[in-house]
Image (cartoon, rainbow, N blue to C red; front, side):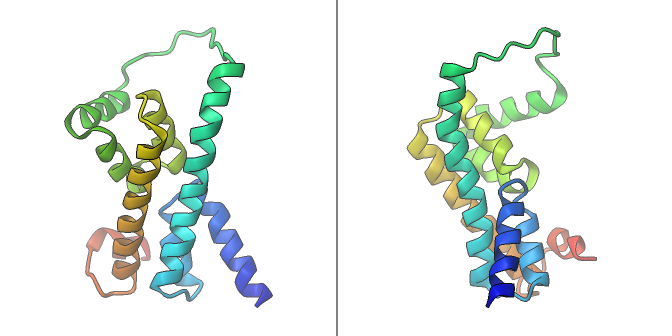
Length: 152
């Protein structure tokens, strides 16, 4: 029981930063689909909730000023803006688990001024969908080459 909880906690902590690791590590730990979904989504949503509320606090109390000039529109930022223009908050939430991190997706949605309840809802739905698809693919129920190749 202690070993199970330590594995679960370890995977949960990794999912705070990188969602894709949850289904892969959950599968290698011998978890079933429900456990894979639970650990992956709970880790992601913890980050989303913390950053959504801490984002307001940072904006209000810590005006961080960068003295060096950064490029404002890098190719990556241009792609994110295009996704935002076409699909809005739902599009950003959809790509977050796979291409962004929970941290990156939440920061982007906060930067675009998405309401907290929409951030939570879209990210939860996205996390549930991707964790289910990845869990089923890794278990071999769905044959999605991208996810199956991650294990090789």
